[in-house]
Every structure is written in C-alpha cells, then in structure tokens.
Amino acid sequence: MQFCFQSKCVLDANVRIKLPPLLLMDLSASNNSGRVMLYCLPEGCLGIYPMNEWEKLRRQGSCESGDILNDAALRRQHRRIGSLSQSEVISNQGRITIPVMFRDMLGLTAGSEVMLVGAEKWVELWSVAAWEQELQIIADHEQKRVVANMDADLKSP
Image 1 (tube, rainbow, N blue to C red):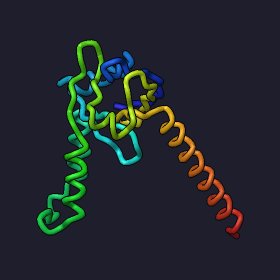
Image 2 (tube, rainbow, N blue to C red):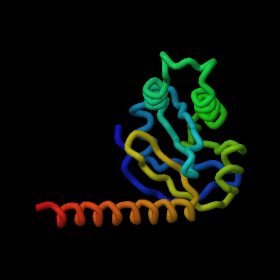
Image 3 (cartoon, one colour):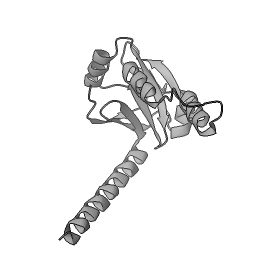
Image 4 (cartoon, helix red, strand yellow):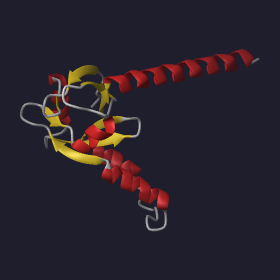
C-alpha cells in the first residue's frame, strides 16, 4: 500500500476529518477492521496508520533483547509511543474524530484547515501552517544536499 497524495480539508464542528474517497478505498483494502492508529509524531503532525502497518512498524521498533527495566531511554521511547498513540474507528461516513489530546498538541480546532499528506506507508494530518513549514524544511535540506554533492563532485579528480 502506498499513500501518495496531498489534500486540503477542513475539520468539522465535531473536530472530525472526512477522509477523501480514494484514501478510504485504500485504507479499507489494507485494513478490514475499520480501525486506524493515530500517533502524534515529533515533527508536529498526526500519523494515521492502517492497523497492519502500525503492527509492522511496532515490531520493527521493538527491542526484544533490550533490558527495559535497566534502560531509561528505552522506557522513555515506549512511554512516548504508548501515551501518544490511540486507535480510532473510521465511521460509516468515512470520518475520524481527532482526540482532544492530539487537537491540543497540534493546535487544531473545529473549522481548522488541515492537510492530509501521504507518507507512502501511512497518512499524516498537518495544520496548513505546519505543513508549509515542513515543506520549507524539506526544500532547504534538499538544496543543501544538492550543493554538497556538487561540491564533492567538483573536488573529485
């Protein structure tokens, strides 16, 4: 499953997001439970994961051999993921309610314009301002990478 798109939406009066029809089709194809996992990402957006993809990512990130009782960083990582994630059901109308905790963290209110952005394996929900800022960060990074590659090529014999 690859989620590749951008879509501007508005949160309704109950602070729900209506998912675009094509996204709903893709989510139902990869997710027969009708549930998604919401996870507040450190970049300032809300990740929306099909449950099967969330489980894969969690398995990759779990450290079976890690000593969670003696490793504060590992406990902190588990604490962050556990406290900043929540499963939600996609309604019959194709809506997801944004939980209060996530609304507060991301500054979302009823009537807010938001961006739904495909991140290949999941979807992200951004405030429009935060998404514009993220696009600038991406562009700046790409420009620095191109300049660094060009400098390296010019220095090569």
